[in-house]
Length: 128
Image 1 (cartoon, rainbow, N blue to C red):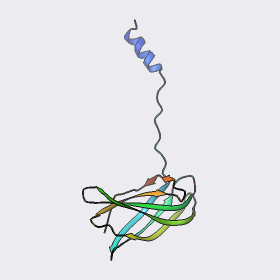
Image 2: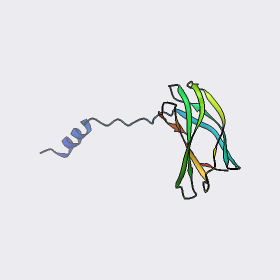
Image 3: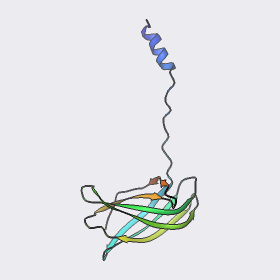
Image 4: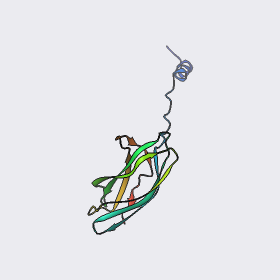
């Protein structure tokens, strides 16, 4: 039978789990505004490639939410066809379809190959 000191020494000697470091983001949304006009939403902003790999063909996915946070719709919009290098900033001005009842939106990102990119600054953003 182990006494208390022997038990604590044995437990302390067990290998400890390594804590995961936070995943580094691939894309950072630096600035993003929206405006509604005549059935369209215009998005103006800029993104920066913060990851170590270049991003080929950046797509932003906008997820539209109602006032209670319920997802109403999603739209993917091509921001850049060319390759964006690590550290590169890309301003954009794009349009999408209006979503009735939507009051805010979130952002996610993909490359042209369909790879899900980790994003800093996902929102939600107000829909003006």
